[in-house]
Image (cartoon, rainbow, N blue to C red; front, side):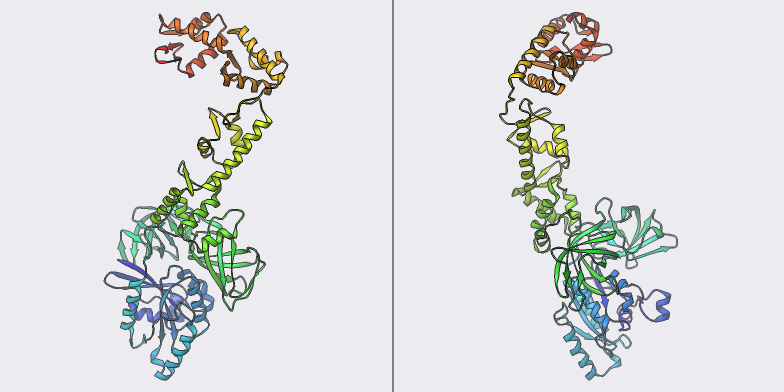
Length: 626
């Protein structure tokens, strides 16, 4: 079953609700006050059913003071039914509703001259000419026009057929994207609990699934689903849905919230957009306040114009909207803006980036606005910098089918535009920039500390702290200009250069360690003996260890390479007749103290020469090649 949403538009008392009732048999005016006053105050809903097609109808109020309610229902509309009363012709809200539909990017619809029974044919012809002039230059310029009477049923069946014909050619909303349903109604159903309704913009949902209410991030379970008063097990994009929520109270949800699947979308309070003003709008000054209508939500926002201080009627511009409360938005979503005071519709636009960086490049917004999917994703990746993003985040960023996003990402990987590291997608330009910065840092490090073997990974993490460390070290491994040895990173071919003083200290260290045999000075004692700073000794010890002249037992203790080899050889001879050795036996074997013996054994354990078993060490020389 295909689902299409039709919305009514038009001035107050131009017969929208009566027409919906004549078409469907359902009275969309559900509120007691609406019945008493004879006008639509809030959104009303009904449906037209054909063989393989359901047309959900959203009936909106026409009164100027209820435009905000009209906007709450306009977001998911595929087709508009512009209703103009034959006895009155074009009126103020006829103009505002048509402008709103135009700004929301609605592409198709019908013009219906209602109350045909109240006028003669000559007057009807005059009104038809006025309406044709009125819709010129809009998406309804070439739309079919039909005169009807809800009172006597004239042309109602013909209108049903024309609605079916238009609905059949509407491209259905995709169920392959992220599930999103902006909430337009919340109520309690006796015996069932909280029910929320809305038009599903994309994706799908099923009974027993967990959903999340944004922006509150409240979670609930789908207890039941209804599509136009019929129980269903799954809800698809384009359908009017009523979701019975388990674990959610009525006062925890409101119009403007969005129902999504958990951990798929995030609220935002800052969006980069393209806007356009209507020809009769008032000018907008930079940093002025506006009413933003997006989905079913209405929030106050401050507009920050890029590269200009004012925007005049019929002009368009790129800007940022900073919101006083969070909304859910995706790149490609359309919206309406209204003046802060007095409140009237002045324009609208499209969301370009719902998660913009601190600094925005207008050239990037041009790509988001006019580019195809691949350039848009590439630009978003570029904006994400070296920390990149995930394919799931990209799918949540843009209002597009998941398989199309996947295919575009695969192409960008194939042509070298992006790289994937630990499930993170990073633009190649960001990788190149990081590489240049890293190489410059390491070169400068070598110049500043010529005696040091290389930069430690901890030092790199501290320097490039904005980069995810897992990604950083994975990228390092791919940089051919760098050499990585355990915890140290240096330029390929780099050799530490010792000064005459350092060479003398190096010789003394080697001599002292060899002479001390299995009783070497600890690092702090060695520094005092040589009368040098700990940092200088650190560098010399690391250099000697990298050359193989000494062996680092732990941070404080080092052995001369010859003495270490002697220890291994002694232990190996012992292992010919013994499978295990105690600390005391090992101490006596080396003629040293228990303190030294324990440090040596911990080193041997960690390097698989020995294995601790209780208070003894199992000797592993049969399986260890040294």
